[in-house]
Amino acid sequence: MNLIDKSYLHPVLRPGYDDISGIFTFECPNIRNEADMYVIDIHATLENETINNLIENGKAKIFLFIYCTTNFYRNAVELKSFEDEVAIPDEDLSGRVDLTLIISATEHLDYRNGSQHSDYGDTVFNIVCGDILAVSDTFLAFAEKKYDSLRKIDSIISINEDKSLPRVAPFTVDLTCDKIKVGVPEPVFKDYMALKRARRATKTLENTIFLPILVSIISEWQREPEHYEEEYILYRWFRAIKARAENLNIIIRDIRDTQHPFVLAQKLLDAPITRCIDEVMNQWQNSNEGEDE
Image 1 (cartoon, rainbow, N blue to C red):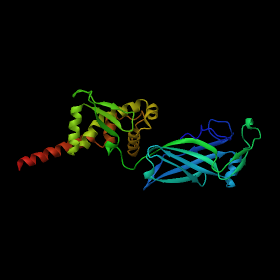
Image 2 (tube, rainbow, N blue to C red):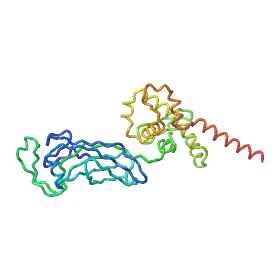
Image 3 (spheres, rainbow, N blue to C red):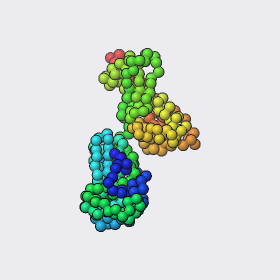
Image 4 (cartoon, rainbow, N blue to C red):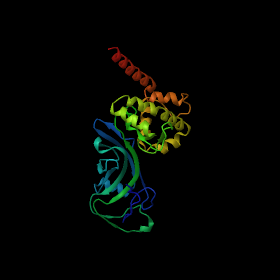
């Protein structure tokens, strides 16, 4: 929700506007998951004498405005200071979360800010309880679940039927969504769904399909790291790969890393080819045992 560009009937300290001179900055690390809560660390700075005095005298308070579109969650949490911590039940947040700090009046005020723009002159404004006096930039964070998405591969990849493809056509890949969409020919999709219903090696199959996709992702990521991260950071699949790499201390974007994308992809997926061979071998051995009986 955009609180900065909203029309106000009084001067508001906010980035990009000159209603009031001063500084209101907000920094926040990514949301961390602890037990059944998401914890948000707040680090902020306010440089405006009038507003600081109102806060010190209890006539204004600091709030963290939390907006999560995925879960339709919206809330304003009162903070004790500009260095504080907020805990939110993990069931309330998922995916992208917009965090904005606001300073709000707690009572009726005859308000004139000592640093308001000269266009306002000496105008005194009628402020009521709840009116916003300052707004920070919005910090974009992500509420990520604890489990490793690359081990639960179907959380970041979706295999879909594409009737326009002939049976032997290459699969199609769409990265512009939370889950990577893989389009497969109709007959292949029917076989895949039959295996899935029978619970036969579909996890291994999904990893095997994902392996060449991941090799391509890593290759492009290494070639243009900043552009690639900026383009895909909003998508769950990218954040899952990035988190997995960080957990394994694999620095994908470092061009000095001499390891080939194919090697890195196998590390991220925990030896998918070996696991695939093991699973096929186990099924083959079990099948042979049945024939011997």
